[in-house]
Length: 305
Image (cartoon, rainbow, N blue to C red; front, side, top):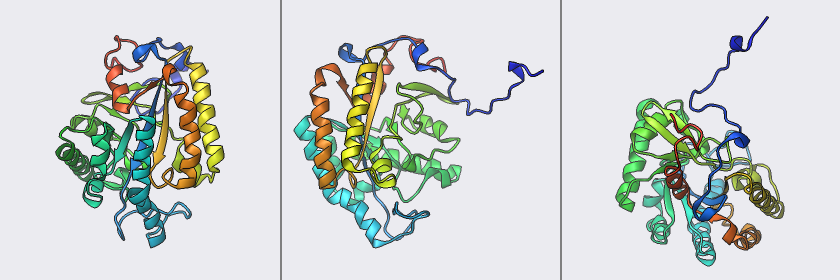
């Protein structure tokens, strides 16, 4: 007869199972229970090289139409979304391909000058970490880190891999370069600690299911429905946060939400959220990570890693 001890479970060994309703309760600053962060992806594709960017076909190839669609986000969508943040007094977690600094002079600096947090997002979305050798991945992370340090005056604290494609060694490499948190694992609505050979690194919730790229492009969800879904997500999480602390992430891409008709609908979402501004903590991913570090031992899953 098989026993529980006979059952083999293959695992990554990064974290242990933890049910959200069996964890200690804590609060965000100001006694809030729902933290909300907006993560805006600012990406660059290398023209005529590397992975393509056309969601309409499998194994996308390189073409002017799809390249131009993505470049529209840098030329038009990003300035629109910067204006949006100013209008609502919001701060993004700006997920930046480091190539953007050279390709779009001054663009990232406009966001950082307004207090938006700069988060590492690879060199370019023309490549994925999972396709790199260890030496290539080390060089990529180091190049991104040094570019952001040189341009911003401080190194980035957070990371999201292009295409959310970590390798089995990525967390060790990120930790070795000084990263404190990452957002590649959509496993929870609370931050949790992951173990690495160099110490722990925090996982900050980042929406995969309700993500403008997945919803509006891959699933072809109408903008009205997507924004209704965001409002429902917010309302449900706000209700649940009376019982436990939660993190809601709203994921944006400049070439998707920067389209005028989508932006028009998205204003409904922000209008709804800001009516509850006194009930929530609107933060950046780095602010959430910094607060987690102040919590007592044993509060956050994995903090014994």
